[in-house]
Image (cartoon, rainbow, N blue to C red):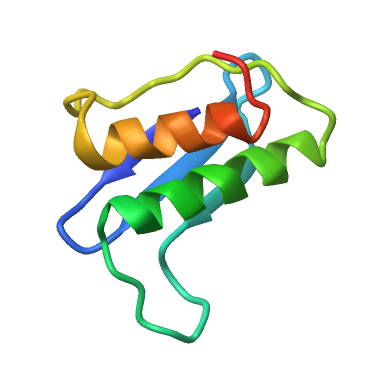
Length: 88
C-alpha cells in the first residue's frame, strides 16, 4: 500500500513488487465533483482503498507512507483502511 499526498490530491496504490504490477489504485482525482484534500476525504479514500483490494481477496498489505509524516491525512487514511478490514 503506497501512499502519495500532494497539495491538491491523495493517491493510494497496491503494488505487487514481485510481479511488478499494480493490483489496485484509488485517488481523489476524477469522480466529477471537486474533492477536498482534508482528513475527511482521506478517511473515505482509505475505506475505498480497502474495499478495492478486499474485492481481489487480499487483506494483508505492507504500508509505505512514502516518507510522509504519519499524522493528519496519512494517519486518517491508514486508520480508515484498517477499520475497513485491511491488516498492516
